[in-house]
Length: 275
Image (tube, rainbow, N blue to C red; front, side, top):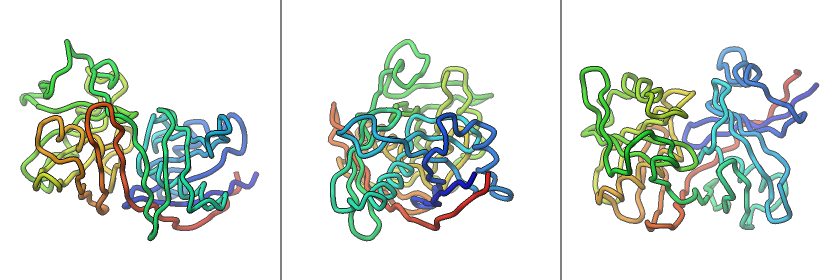
């Protein structure tokens, strides 16, 4: 079997974008094998483009982390899927509607490889994240070893914990991220963002992604950080999010409005694998 795929990235957060060769493809072992950066294609997530569920949508997609687990959303990956579908169907200048695991998403390709995409309404209720807690709080506290950690929590189609730090360069991303990811109060595990506020329209961010580790960029993590920062009264409606791989623009009006994200979606190469 010949598997055709496209390698893409958004700010260095990289993906294998592919249509499924069969109804049961892929299993977790296949994802892990393909994700290996020495013996496979190498990626943070596999983006599986599926047929549209109805006439309103241009396509659907599923998301698999490098460890083989399936995710509910991926912002950088969604932008790459939008560009991949637009180029496949010759609709680069038209608005699109994509069916994601967490709901329908509007998208539009812009000049210079940029894609604007709707990321859904941030969900702060503990049951929606999911987070085990007595009730909704602007900041939660949990003991990690000998330290008490304070964070905000939100779902952007996948769970996020956001910690405010003085300097992301020295933040304990590689130490605290993996520990908080598997904390018992996050039954579906959690992505962990480390947020530094530069001013009301500019933040720096590093993200430990569940099932992956720290990535160069995380689109849902950027939206989560802005949503939490807005809830804390620290940020304006439109914010530049500087990540190790580059910058995203996130816009969220608040309340029941969806967040919007704009950033690059880069096609690296097309490939073929013999399975």
